[in-house]
Length: 193
Image (cartoon, rainbow, N blue to C red; front, top):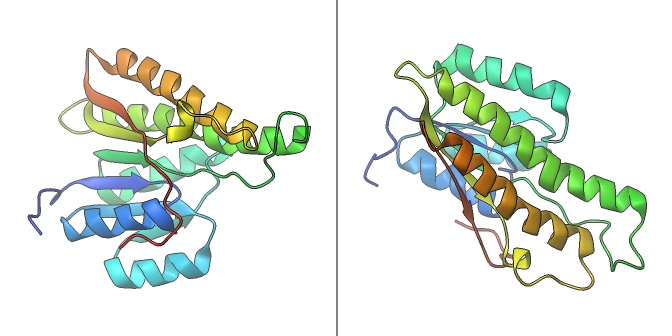
């Protein structure tokens, strides 16, 4: 690969499978130092062995855990250049008539609140980079943001809200050298390599 991420530090949430794991592999192959989060320790161990990336067990929706994660990244790497807000769930979803309040709150907690916390802490960390507020934040949304599914009301709602959240963050960052963009991915049921 080109090494275009050499010297860059990246944080990838939801990095233990699918698009997240594929991103860990790709950025590592391009020379980035990677910290990735998730909840699948066995998959994470294999990915660390393959890529040299660092895994941190972390729940994006746990607001109290963010300060220590970001302090650890700063202490080890001194900067943060790229953040990929990829963590997301759909388990426990259903139609608007069938979903439980617990299912709704859990999905929105990970898919929306977790992404807001990711963006918030990324901006703060990037502002502290040695050369000032510089970096890129990429948010993984979904085609469900624009084409909601009737049997996935919380997932569809959360992905639609991510578009507005990311646009708001991008406007907030417009006078800095920090970018926030969203990716409207399709469905990826298989492991990306």
